[in-house]
Image (cartoon, rainbow, N blue to C red; front, side):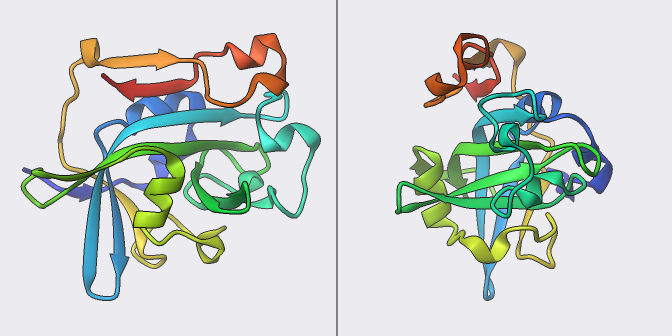
Length: 183
């Protein structure tokens, strides 16, 4: 099984293109000498200032500043007073676009499933994600990066649906099928 770090150019696409391509990729978290591998199984795209479900729809703020950086950085924010949300910044500089990593499977180096991470808060807790990763690069320097292990997910197992918890964004944006998941 060939394992390679996903390069910077991959992240310079819109979130709606990257989100389905992340399914089957491996999120690698290094904490001290330990590495945790997570097979990404669900993502959500948030793309541009017109996307009323995106934090960027209200303009640039201190909270969402990371979304306006060039693709290949992390956008991490706190919700409900208890959960850190991990987002991968996409696209070109000054165009706010990000993919929320919603779910995954903790696996070993042989892809044996060790644990299911149901939801973005659970995933972030397992990987010890917090504000310190906000704006950091998607690379070994930050201790959090994405690898391609050559896993091919059959297209019949990849589905899209409406994003979770964004009914406030209006009917058009709430029904946008920008959540991608493996069945």
